[in-house]
Image 1 (tube, rainbow, N blue to C red):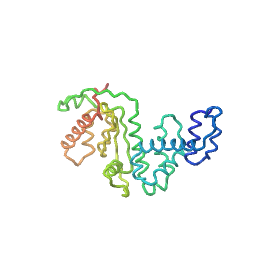
Image 2: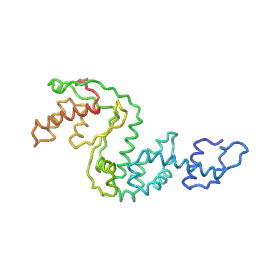
Image 3: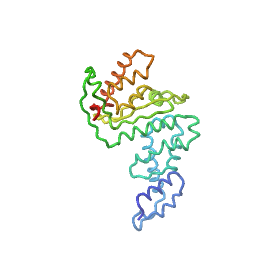
Amino acid sequence: MSSLREIETTLTSIWMERQPVESAQSLSCLLEGEKFDADGASLYARLIGYGHSDVISSIYPYCAKVLNRNWEKTIKQYVKMFPPDHFHLNSSARKFPQFISEHCPELLDKLPYLGELADYEWLEMELLEIDTAISVTSKTPLSEPQAFVSLGPVINPTLKVRTYKYPIQQIVDLIDDGKGFRKKFRPAQSHVAMYRDPYTHKVRIVDLDENAHTILSEADRSSYGDMARRAVELNPTRNPEKSVADVIEMIEQFHDINLFVGERKIGT
């Protein structure tokens, strides 16, 4: 009796036309005495292929849109190089960013941001499935001076921050608006924060400027006062009061959107 893994591997190969249908006769997956059905095997192989295609398309809708007519061919090439190795269908798509970045030079010549776009989309999928408990606690108003010195934020434990060579969030927004499919984007470093909301369980995405990225990267070991001082240091030619006001507004916003989920006493 063939294993389900062997059956899927063989039928996937038939779908990709790497293996003739007749070779599937070697699979002892049929009932004893039942005649091998080549047409049925071909149909089932196509259904396996549609399953791979649907899963990958659902995880990478932006890549599918920008690749357009090249999408189905790209999926076949991907599955051929990285065949499914896990019963969980979504896991079969996890190496797609690697495939684009390392094995698709002709696509990157036309769409050099494509590998980063694929990474952006996979990260969102990964966060939807991550099994991490998120506890939200109350915070002290920053209008209390003592809070600035003695307290710091607790960061949402699902937070992931990516730094990209291209303005990925801008590209995604343009695609959402039905634009930018053929636009040639110049490299422009961008920072994207992704995390799962503790109440809606949906992934939230925040585009960070350079200063916000720096301050957020240090937030897990900083007090609110440290974050304000850092904001002043990063803007030496700006009015310090304005910098402090802006970082307080950012901290409040991060709490409001559950990027920060509580506060901790400094030194504990």
